[in-house]
Amino acid sequence: MLRVVGVVIVLVIFVYALVDVIRTDRHQTRGISKTAWIIVMIVLPLLGAVLWFIFGRPYNKPTAKPVRHQPTAPDDDPEFLRNLETRRRDQAEDERLKKLKADLEAKERGLNEKPADSSGDAKSNGFKPGDAKRTEPDPHDTDELK
Image 1 (cartoon, rainbow, N blue to C red):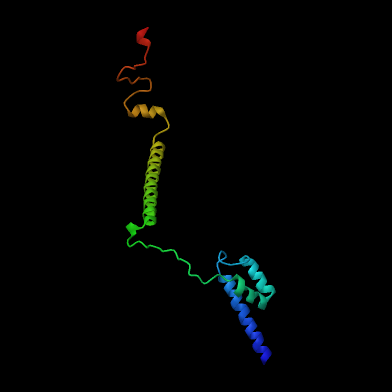
Image 2: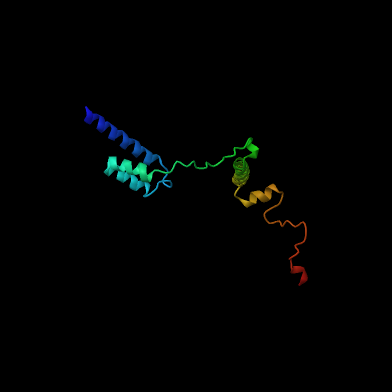
C-alpha cells in the first residue's frame, strides 16, 4: 500500500511539473531551453521535476500585462476606419469595372448588329457607293496648292 501511495505521489509531481513546463512561456524559462526541460522531465521524471521547481521555473514576479485600450465606438478604432476605407475603395473599383464591362458589352452588341457590307451603310445615309461625302474642306488636302 505504501508503494502505491509513493508511485502516485511521484506521478502527480511529474505530471504537474511537465504541465507547468509546457504552459510556461519559452522566454521565461531559466537555465536551459523549454525543449530541453521537457526532455529532462521525460528522461528523469522525479529528478527533472525537482530540478524544474528549483532551477527552471520562472520567478513569481508579476509581469506587466499590456494595457489594451478598447475603442468606445467604431469611428474611434483606427483598424475599423482603415478597413472601412479599403472596403470603400474596393466597392468603387468594382462599380467602375462593372460599368466598363457593361460599356464593352454594349459596344460589342452594337458591332454585331451593324451589317458587314459597307455598301449598306452608304445606302442608309443616302449616299451611293461612288459618291464622296465632303461637308468641309480637308485641311491637309494639297491638291489646291498645286
